[in-house]
Image (cartoon, rainbow, N blue to C red; front, side, top):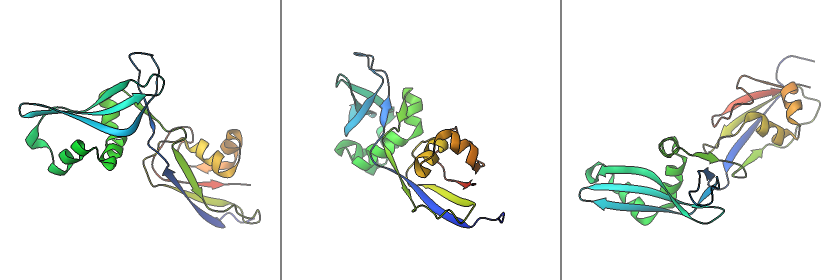
Length: 184
């Protein structure tokens, strides 16, 4: 058996829908909300604007406002972004929701369970070992590498920890590409 890599396979992680927002509902104390249709609320106060992203509690359907901009001067907005807020542009909803500053400002997190899929190359023949796999992210999906690898290879997580060589920590969520090697 040689020590060099025989096969290199590409994997791509893609977003299938917007993730849920983990935020406490003031009515039912549920911890999940969804963007639904993706709507903004823009409120003008003189020459200052407030912009919120509206999300709905998945349990009681209450609307919760996530602050996007607070008392920002109208002149500080890009005209295209301001128009996007007013017409509820779906691309702007997605980019706003995926912006880490929104989660930090509103003390919430994104729940990616069921929001992504793995486009993996076909399985390799057992004759060519070791196998190197490169993982790329088409969208900033936050996922634990060990879970992703277990799903892609059909292994248990304990098998992943034994059979995978990777410089990226396997138990720390990431949304950046990485490469790992499967050993027999």
